[in-house]
Length: 357
Ligand SMILES: Cc1cc2nc3c(=O)[nH]c(=O)nc-3n(C[C@H](O)[C@H](O)[C@H](O)COP(=O)(O)OP(=O)(O)OC[C@H]3O[C@@H](n4cnc5c(N)ncnc54)[C@H](O)[C@@H]3O)c2cc1C
View 1 (cartoon, helix red, strand yellow):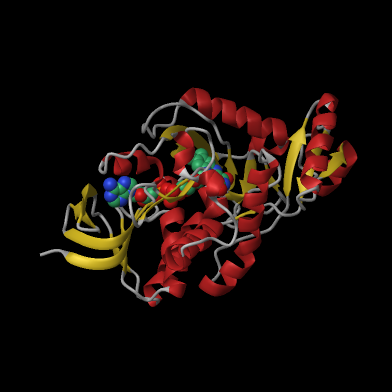
View 2 (spheres, rainbow, N blue to C red):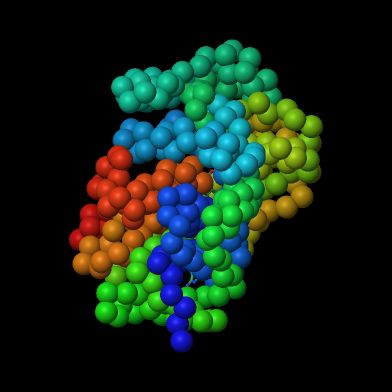
């Protein structure tokens, strides 16, 4: 016999958990989150976790990210300390010729309420004395920061469980069928029936769509990150390229490689990343690297989130995106509105899967 839930979320990363938690605030019906491994095993456990806004393009996408960043302080109040720090973000440039581009970025973002300053060399070094003195300048925005993705998921889960959300881990979904207005979700452990089904499987979302004959165009893009030994706090800002975590470790890098689902780390990228980090912050030359890891981005074909209802399938929803750490609180909020109220407080039409038709 199948177990019934009102809503099933497939995927327990920052996106699936953000949805499950926000749903649980409004909606006391049965919600189940399924994950084939454990909730930090996917991309959400192998990320830089910047909450990053200021040089995302085009400006409407930066605006979307800004709304999510603005939700973080409130989210932390509700679910507990997720080590969210609004450090401010610096994107250094090393050629004076890049200043004009930076000024154009600042001007176009001013119109949507994202304040970006274009800093001189001296201003950069005053803010972040460890940066390479050869820097020409930087764009700076106070809205950027970072979060601890492990705490974020842990706190989401604790809060969701308090609100009666169920979890089943190490339980892979192997088939999905539509039957008499409901979804039958077949997993390794059990078969479930639900009214609402949310596909939040990160980089595996294409596979989940395929179970219902739907093309969800999410690709894989590997990123490798180096981790230093814990160093005494010395970086004040989140720098596009590296950040210092609360425990003193510096996380360096963001490579972008087409390697399918292969999560290996490779010597060439490790070397490039170390060179980049030392170029930005020369004192890192003396730091010991203790670990390298890689994560596989969930990268929609055009780079922008795929969010909302799936046309032609009643009560079927998708949430697949890069920048899922930044966007998690907003996606959770908007997907909840869509499910509970049938509409969202800000339009998400441009993120509909129908744009790929
Ligand atoms: C190197 C790197 C750096 C990044 N830096 C940033 C950053 O600074 N800021 C930012 O905002 N974002 C960043 N990202 C992106 C961000 O980490 C991701 O967008 C986010 O983690 C995606 O979350 P998710 O919940 O969609 O996916 P995941 O965390 O991968 O969760 C999906 C879950 O679905 C489960 N699942 C899949 N298929 C099934 C199935 N058949 N049955 C059951 N469960 C299933 C998986 O086990 C997994 O746990 C970075 C990514 C990488 C790789």
